[in-house]
Every structure is written in C-alpha cells, then in structure tokens.
Length: 276
Image (cartoon, rainbow, N blue to C red; front, top):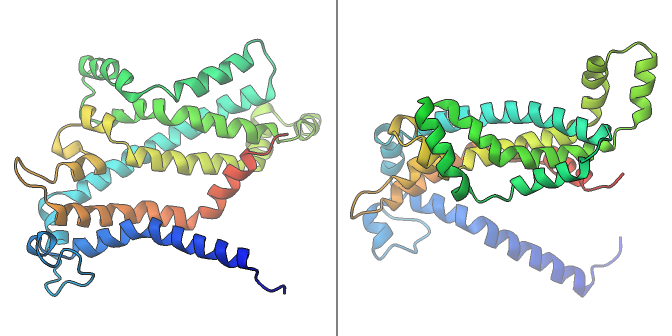
C-alpha cells in the first residue's frame, strides 16, 4: 500500500469536515428535541447535554399533536404516488426509448420542461379542479403529486431502457414470447436499477412535498408531515421543542429507506448517466 500524500490527507480532512457540516443540523435537532422551552431560549441554548432533559416534546407531538396521523397520511400519499408513477413512467420511458417516431426528441424536451414548471403556477388550476370535483382533503392528492415526480422518473428510466440490448427482445420474440412477457421477464429485470432508483426518489419527493398538501389537504386529519410540523405554532409562539421532536421522528422512515437502499439508488442514478 502506498503512503498517503499531503493531498490525500487534505482530501480526507475535507471529506470529514463536509460530513460534520452535513450531519450537524440533524444532530442538533435531536439534541434540541430533549430540551425544555426554558433551556431552548435560556442559558442552556448551546448546551449539548441539558441538565433538564425531558421526553415531554415527544409525548406532546405523538399524543396531543397527532404527528402519527400525519406520518400515516404522508406514507399513504407517497406509497400511492410511487406505485402509479413507477408504472406510468416505466411504460412511457420504454416506448420512448425503444420506438422511433416523429417528435420523439421534442417529447423528451417537453417532459423535462414540465418538471421545471413552478408549483405556484400549477396550484391555482389544480385547487379549482379539486374544489369542483370534491376531492379536497382526500388521498386524491396523489394525482397532482405525479405532476412533480413523473417527469424526472421518466427521464431516469429512458436512459436505462436504452441500455437494454434490442437483440434480447428479438431473441425472446423468436422463442415465442409475447410483448408483455418480454417486457416483464426480460426488459424490466435488466432495467431494474433505474426503475428502483426512480421509485425511491419518487417516494422521498412525495413524502417531503409541502405546497400541494398545504393547499389541497388543509384539514388537520388530512395534513401531511411537512404541513403538520409547520403548524406546531400559535399566534405568538413557535414550539421549537415540539418541532424538533417531530422532525426527528419523521426523518426516521426516509433515513431507513436511504440506508437500506443506498446502493440501489446510487447504482440506478450512476448507470442512468452512462450513454449507450
């Protein structure tokens, strides 16, 4: 093994410093969540370990503020969005990647352009439509979530489907496989890293969505996690202890997902960046 040079040590130090800066906000959120309001705003504000550590903030957000209901709503919304976006995006991306037709390049540009639309432009028409259809405060909010997550999912999958050799599909056709059987048993398994990565990113994006949920699901029983946390306040007071406790609780699901599937996420994104 070669000796580490000064450049190697400098890079290692930079990486450690970057990780500390990245992790510090979450660590401080956890530390603050165990403090009382007096410690948060008093002399113990910057204390790492509070002498009056308490679980009161966690008990309050779970028992009184209904954070578990918000977690349930966010999970259902994110799961439903992930399922239909993954199915729709995989079919669309396969057609765009495999078949040549007029306007294909323009269609790809339009898909990418749609993802750049500011939500403030879309929220008004969507709210009017939901109001007239009676869909406010319901799980139908997963439909407009697709406006945000579908374009990026299609974009990721297109590259992965392009990497699937067309000769494999031709061989399957010669062996008597139907188009659907070829798609499910040959194409999708090979493109699985891209499909899986886009599904995870879709779930995380839907889990963290705020503006649509704030506008369309304004009743407490239907609030998602970001909206419920933003409402942990009254006219004159922001309950920082409860906010940090709720943030620590709701970060756990996405953190577990990322830790469990980080290899698939990185592999899917990295492979998607390789041109055919």
